[in-house]
Image: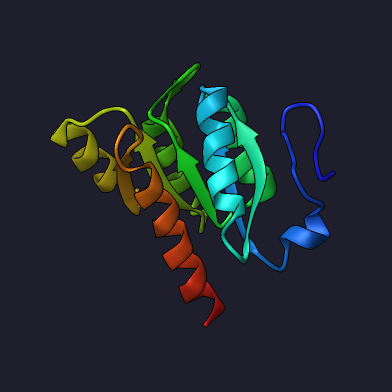
Length: 142
C-alpha cells in the first residue's frame, strides 16, 4: 500500500505509475465505492486514493499528484471549490472533475470558472462521469 491512515490506497505506487491515477473525493462512502468500482473497470485506470473531507483531499492531491480528482462540492471542512482553488494556486497538473448533486447552472459555471474540466450530476450522470475518465485515459495512451 502506498499510504495508510488518511488515505485509502487500493494499489501500490509502482502499479499506479503506469496508469491514469484517480483520486475520489466525496463524503459519501457508497458514492466513493460505486465510483471506484466503475473506474476500476476501465483499462488503464487505477484509483489511488479516496478521501471524504476537504483538508484530506488537498493533502492527498499534493502528496499523490493524481492525474484526475473526482470531486464533490459539499464535503466536511469546506467545499470542492476550495480544492479547485488549491489546485490552481499550487499550479498542479491534476485534472478536476466535479461530480455533485447540485443541478443549478451557477454551480457548473463556478466549477468550470474555478478550473474544473468537467461537471456531472451524480444522480443522473454517474456513467457519463466514468465515460469522461475512459475518454481521458484513451487520449493519455496515445
